[in-house]
Amino acid sequence: MGVVIGWDIGGVHLKAVRAEDGRITKAAQYASPLRSGTGLLREALVTARKDMGRGDRNVITMTGELADIFSSREDGVEQLSSIAERELGNVSIYAGPTGFVAVDQAARHTMQIASANWHASAALVANHRKTALFIDVGSTTTDVVPIADTQVVARGYTDAQRLAVGELVYTGLVRSFVMATAGGAPLNGLWTTLVNENFATMADVHRILGTLPPGVDLMSTADGREKSVLASRARLARMLGCDAANADIRTWDLLARWFAEAQIRAIADAVMLVISSCIATSAAPVIAAGIGVGVVAEVARRLELSWERFDELLDVAPEAREAVCYCAPAAALTALASQSD
Image 1: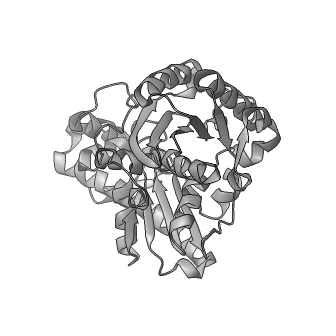
Image 2 (image 1 turned 135 degrees about the horizontal axis):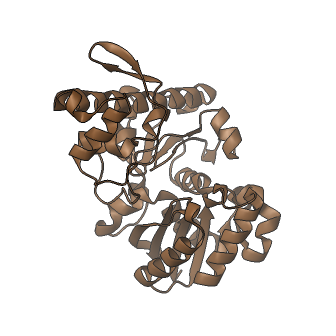
């Protein structure tokens, strides 16, 4: 099988996973915000290529084609495929049920390639579990995908379709705006409307609560200031038109708990919607992935579902397990590519 390196090109992060003869030995995430242009992606690919080493085959999936620097999703798929080919060489692009296609075929498979990273992860789960519910909470979004009779039985494929049926939820552990998590929040015994400004993100919420895993918050803060609990409380207070000095620490910590609960409820609601469309998954195990694996575990607990980590489905070196769980689509690609050889 040789060395296969899986790459997941997102709008903000690049994720890479190295597998040697089917065993995953290394996984990592790199900052590469496409809103600043493709230059940072190229730099991230160069850095990651050095970290990951030589690969006999490079397999790519993406969500970065949605970045507004591209005129359309088609434009994004073509540009990102070309950049990957130039920087990495020997590249195949994941096109969902179609499988892997060459770079020069990417334009013909835009709709299958665009934002198909969730499908790679779910397809890998379907290879290992007859029935399951795959849930991946990342930095920006959450995927909820049903698997039944060893098949991915998602009702949606495109982002628009998946949003409509609860299989894609725009909430994540780091980058989600707090103002998008709830319309109001409790403060001093009153329901207070939120300020519709990007004063704080869910990274601030999880930093305050101590539920933000180390090394996953690679972006700058909403106000450009430090990533400390103190600064996060100040940012969160501004969401309610306050300064941190207007109340004690317990008030802001309780507020953070409120927003974390609102996020869990939003994901649990989506899970219930998906389960209602595929009753076979109502008692199926949850396969948890993403930097928000802890959130997935809590959702599973509340819905009385068993759960296991995505990395447990793969042959992974112990030191790479945590990162593999965070980089599920890229890890899945290495296994799917080996099967397609």
